[in-house]
Picture 1: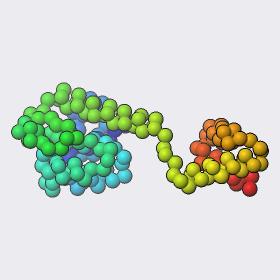
Picture 2: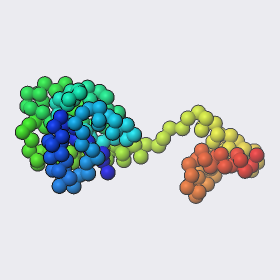
Picture 3: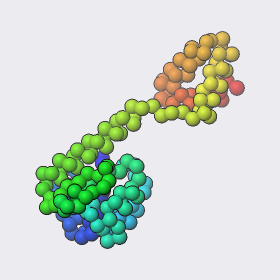
Picture 4: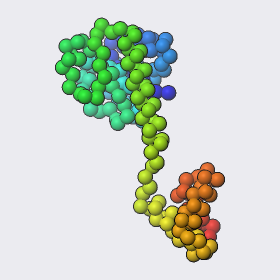
Length: 181
């Protein structure tokens, strides 16, 4: 589920946008009237979409955009003149008056982009730190010395044990070191 936040100075307008989105199958996480409220709401989240107007009661959209954590995308709802002057390259814009069809299509596209980022991040293996590499190396050396196997055979053993047990290679290396020392 994609976290969607609607931030408009008039809470009734924000609730109206939420209603349109929910009618079209989107789950809206929160409706806010100020930038500070949305920043407070997103503290513990990794990603999402912030739909906002040009000016909230406490900040303008560019200030809010600068405060958003990485992983959050912004959709600016503003007049055509503001949209034309918009300076942030990574802010999506829709001009007012808003067409429901445009809003739904844009939010759908932004949701798909976030989903693709999730998939891409899952496909890229996490890089191990030097401590983790040292643990795996130590476990391989122990296996090589105790079982008289090559480095590639020791690596394959740790890899297979890791897959069989459902743990990552670092945890498997730790288990080998604990059991064999």
